[in-house]
Image (cartoon, rainbow over all chains, first blue to last red; front, side):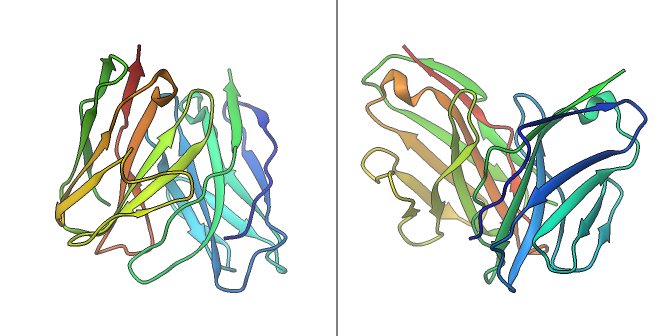
Length: 112
Length: 115
């Protein structure tokens, strides 16, 4: 699976949009971009995933560049409860799912 | 989504002993995984728990140290054997539900401290 590069930490003001970048320049055509987050002392929580089109759900939006070498996770109105480590992962989806390889992630701090 | 529970939620153990961690999913799943998260670190995959066959271990992890069982489609156990303080970590179970084959869901984790 391709490696990802994320900034180690970011700050965001409460109520503002949080934009978390991820570089995955070696991504293959059959690899998806996944985002998870881990709030302190809890198991990782699935946020969103995509292949090449932008995706949106109730939690966030995922913007993938046309060349697929980078992506941005957008939390439109960050709250204090969004403070967490955010992981960007690229992986092939095998039949019935495949393993996730976690990098170091971005520690997002949402401040009042 | 799948709801995953783990037992125990935390434990403190003596070196040289073993601990078995249980993972229960609220629906039948095809694939289950075990991860380790050492203090201040990211998650590292230990193994894939295969139903009806031996687990598939990642590099650096061996069956003698981390035996895994998967007796059915909703349950798995991970044993941490002959523990040392270096085994102090959070151990997490995850699963891919049959309904959403492309998303992996995680349990709350088991916090293990070895003295």
